Length: 222
Image 1 (cartoon, rainbow, N blue to C red):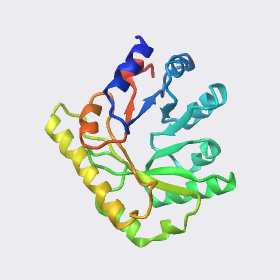
Image 2 (cartoon, helix red, strand yellow; image 1 turned 30 degrees about the horizontal axis):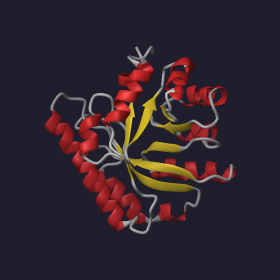
Image 3 (cartoon, rainbow, N blue to C red; image 1 turned 90 degrees about the vertical axis):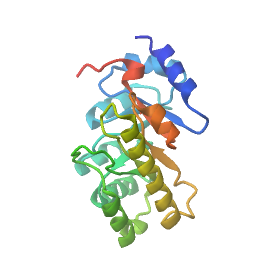
Image 4 (cartoon, rainbow, N blue to C red; image 1 turned 45 degrees about the horizontal axis):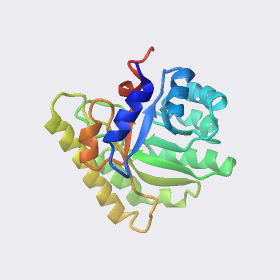
């Protein structure tokens, strides 16, 4: 697996304004170091303990993005250094991130995870529950989080039309939220969608952050 070649190939496919999150979860430091040497700086992790260990042992200028389901009781471990949390799936989690960020004097960029897939996923706001959370308004009192966009995962299917429909629905919803709640925010600009098997479709549908793992690092050793 030539990580450097892979990373350059993926980057070459991404238009200007679309950033690559190299999903390094379950891959060793050595693999991350090869990607880093190839110029990659944003890496995605989904297990808090693994992320903390990597953060302490790898270059300090890496931007770590947390892309998995985050439990409220684990937020404190990553609050001092995390660059972005992609999968905020409840107001309770958003409030906890705000609380822990305040303790370390930071404002943490967050994305609202929206459940767009047909599969019964456990996590993510529905469109309606996200609208209700934002309409309720308590989030506006949180001064140590910055809601910067949305994140979603398409159904794991070979049907490209379905995947495209799901991505396009997230793009439309992003536009609705931008217009309704974030029209004055230049920071609300991210749509995190697309993984190794479907990121070209996500880019066509307006993704600004693609989360690519196996296409760069190969299959994971769990």
